[in-house]
Amino acid sequence: MTPTPRRNNEAARTYSLKQLAELVGGELIGDPGITITGVAGIKEAKKGDITFLSQTRYLSFLGTTQASAVITSKNVTSDQKPIIRTANPSEAFSKLIAVFIPSRPPRKPGIHPSAFVAPSAIIGKNVYIGPHAVVEDGVSIADNAVIEANSVIGADCVIGESSLIYSNVTIRERVEIGKRVIIHSGAVIGSDGFGYETENGLHQKISHVGTVLIEDDVEIGSNTCIDRGRFDKTWIKRGTKIDNLVQIAHNVIIGENCLIIAQVGISGSVELGDQVVLAGQCGVVGHIKLGNKVMVGARAGVSKAWPDGTILLGEPARPWSETKRIVVLTARLPELFKDLAEIKKKLSIE
Image 1 (tube, rainbow, N blue to C red):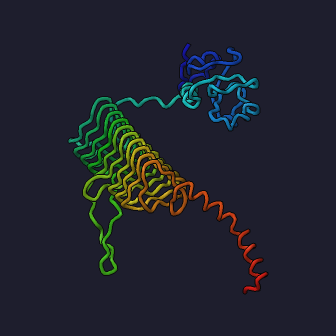
Image 2: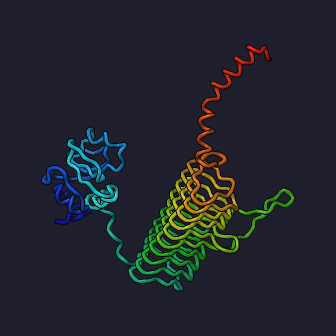
Image 3: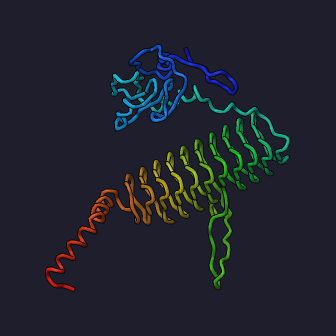
């Protein structure tokens, strides 16, 4: 039996542990008749909830959680709680979240009466355009796209099939958005790059007449800003995920399936390879290239190019092994200064 998601105003449903194990394709160890009424984190779970545990360092929670059952990996054994063993506990738990806490119902296609859609815009099938949204001249919106309230799609933009533009997003002129792209509220795509020429102490604005290309399956977080290229394009390639409050400057190229975490700043003309990870609050100086699978730790400052597979940390960013040694030695500085003072005293050195 497959559980049916609960919708608004619908009575809460309950499922047996056996049903949920079948749903996620897991191995059940424990009473199959236990009733499950909800999902929760392992610390917050109460009786009737199911939770998950994916990392062995949290195994101690099996003895303390109040959850009625736990989804675990295949190598876990427990006589403390009923468990469902799966190849990927996090993925399995996500399936159950969709059962107990269903996502919002899909938008019914149509254009809200308060929205403005230019006569020259091309609107595909099953498109939703919400209240007070603005779609300017020459825009093309493909089938099944959703444009939420108050968002602005500038002239000559392209919005790909099944893309979701949340409320209060600004997409400036001539930007191209691929298929299945998600852009969260407050994001600005295609703003002018930060470029000025200084003459006689005055900052004269440099025109940025390029564009932004967002490829398929990219997700862009709230209040992230992606500047347009000066002449060519700022380019975000397929499958990359960008967190909230990220700044991506003009002419940046970000490779496929990268992860850009919150408050990262990427300066102009940087090129990132595929599967690069930039952790929170790190910064990358302009006009450098990071190779494939480079990982940059939180708050690191990257000031030069690095090859494939490098793991960086610190300011300036250095390979992790080098930074680790520096951190260890830095922690010993008080002790070393004390030793030095004693040596100077013994040698009568002022």
